[in-house]
Length: 233
Image 1 (cartoon, rainbow, N blue to C red):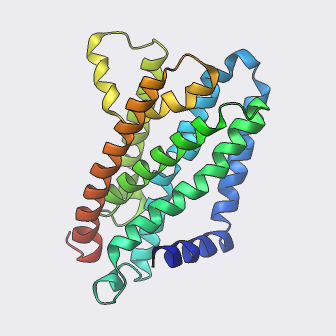
Image 2: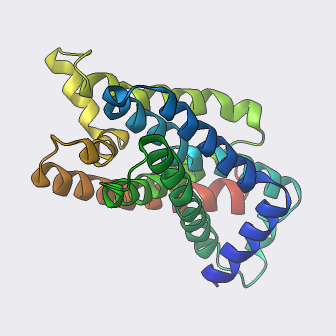
């Protein structure tokens, strides 16, 4: 069932030029990275990977939920044999799969290298699932993009703060709280191709993102059923 939902969503998104445009944006990011001197790649590439394939699920899944609320697709989940849990997992899987070629475009085109690509793909897969599930959890309560804009902006700002801490701009001890934001462990994966990231840090980062994935799935499951399927306001 999940596979069928993924194929259907991919077909609709491709026909509507959503995913092709998304990949074109990734291509543009890759070309932008090429314009930077090689010495800046270790800073610019992780930033673009967080913004594009990392967080795109949070943005896209919100708009998808709003559209499917309006056309009655989500409301039908309450009275059809279609499992709403499968709907959630299909959204997360689809955004993760779409994010992977985007990450390849940004990293390989921008750096003109394949060295370290497995780290980028692993980080992209994990963080994309987390942010897509968080997007489902938050967007489920809202009816349109105007209401979703404030939490969307808030999540984007919070997710970029670890980037500033990682590069030494936020040095006070209180900023260590940023380690709990899922974009922080993703930064270790995206920085690994450029060196300076230990295997231990990568292991802990993977574990942190997996824990976030479990938490985000629980939140998505509870809030999606309450606000989207049952229609509680």
